[in-house]
Image (cartoon, rainbow, N blue to C red; front, side, top):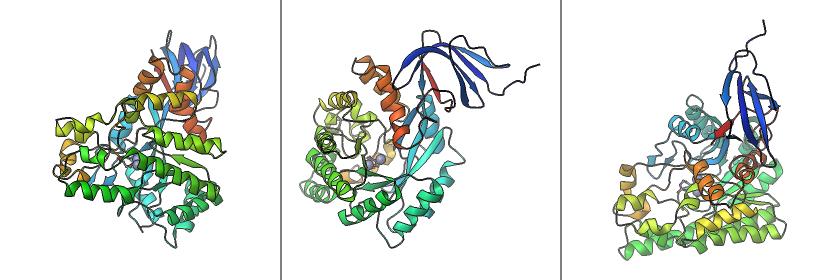
Length: 405
Ligand SMILES: NC(=O)NCCC(=O)O
Ligand SMILES: [Zn+2]
Ligand SMILES: [Zn+2]
């Protein structure tokens, strides 16, 4: 009698989509790995058979930017590693990359262990970590090396906003970019001019602007473009590849394109929220509605931006999509009822990204399914060095699969 493979699966009659090809094939999975891709495959003994006739089989989504249970702005994001990754799977995302964010001056290694302790017992999907550097200390270089060489961390993040919280100065960022270059790690930036934003926030509060509209008024798009350009220049001076998280405006995207034109290796990541809606939400008469949309950089005041960001993803000038999932309940957002600077920054998206990108990209006719796979899965896998284990449907790859109508 043939041996029964535990968890074996035959997905029959579907159309496999990778970032470079689309073809009719069955897929056999054994022990969590794709073992056969081809026509007319037989089910391994004891296998469950799924009829995918008329459906697409896609590599599971990879969301390269989430903040599960992040302690931030005096509270903690409500999607923890259980709820958040359950939501990810429900929406077709099978891997997330979350951020370890130490308090300035705290040990990076200790913070890394804290995040592992939060995530390991609870995650429902695959996950990896990227580590933020929130202050340069005499231990930072050696801790970055330990994280890279012993813990598998291959990217570090820098905040150019959130003054007096996570923001780093240019000299700190440049020093760390040089270290990334040495280690072969990728530098990732939240690009906004935190100093100018801080000044504008104080001026608006003095003028009596306290509502969510103050959030967008204190963060003009030019300040995102300026910081994006500055990060690109510093990365170029350090000869280090750069990844700009949550590209929210046309100006920031243009700066990325300019630097790429000159030969720089820079990646741009729009997020689901920025592809789905715009900054008019900050002027909604319902405070709760407006505050729910507070994230940084803010949603664009220009209603044509979401479509333009999708166009840039389609043409390859922007590269992959994320969510920046960092969720707060209305009661938490209400911490900023009388002062917009105290509204915890962050929105949802981890469950919605795949459908938002499908709707705004494929359904609208801007993307074919292969480009959809590229910007939701395989480009992230390539950038973060987990390809083709992830991000591809092929023999030997992980069976992270999504079947869609
Ligand atoms: N984006 C945002 O508003 N919240 C999460 C933290 C960050 O990524 O900046
Ligand atoms: Zn950010
Ligand atoms: Zn973020």
